[in-house]
Image (cartoon, rainbow, N blue to C red; front, side, top):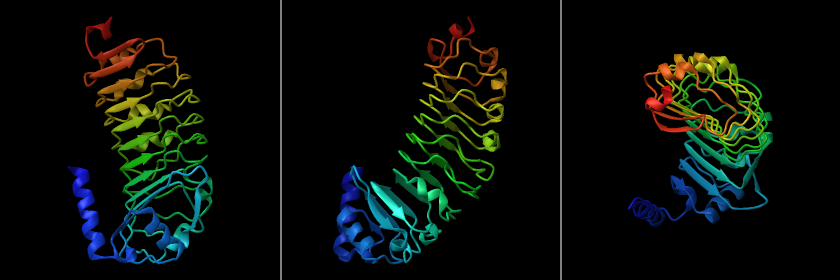
Length: 273
């Protein structure tokens, strides 16, 4: 039903506004490419999606977005952007760019209104070179970024709720500033096979509900500081080098589901044995 309603809405928009550049949302690849390649973007456009399945990404100029002053949602896949990021609307709330180029970190990036960043399958080694003020950001997804070696500095991202770094195979450093994320609910580090230790500050996350370390094959210890995670309900840490259940985990009253040291399932007396 959801997809039927979505398609109906799109068709109504298409009929009422036949010119793509007059619509608030653009999703048809041919129309989007036409608008961007011919610099026909207007302030009417609030959402734009261009997800291409190409072995070799298509290159587009960032100045094609300069007239889209009200753009709030941008979804890209199989696309590389060339040029200065100052042309992207500062009204952006959701930025999804699968296969994000490593060059983007060297260009101006001022997006303080973003609520979600989705850079899955990126080519980034660093997320950004200088500290960013992202006071509204709630979701940061960098999964499958195989060149990423370290997390960004989290000092100025106080409202982050979900940090997803699944299968970042070269990630070896989680910034100690992760302890500044007072509202974080989920940290997912599944499959980060180069990660050896967690910063001690991560145990200060009193509101964290879910911590996923499964497949982090080099991590061999959880600190007794785990007891400070008083809201933790789910801990998934199978296929790690951890061989001993920390006593702190046994004392945690909030924990509901555990996958660790061969035990998997809801908390029960087996965890105490």
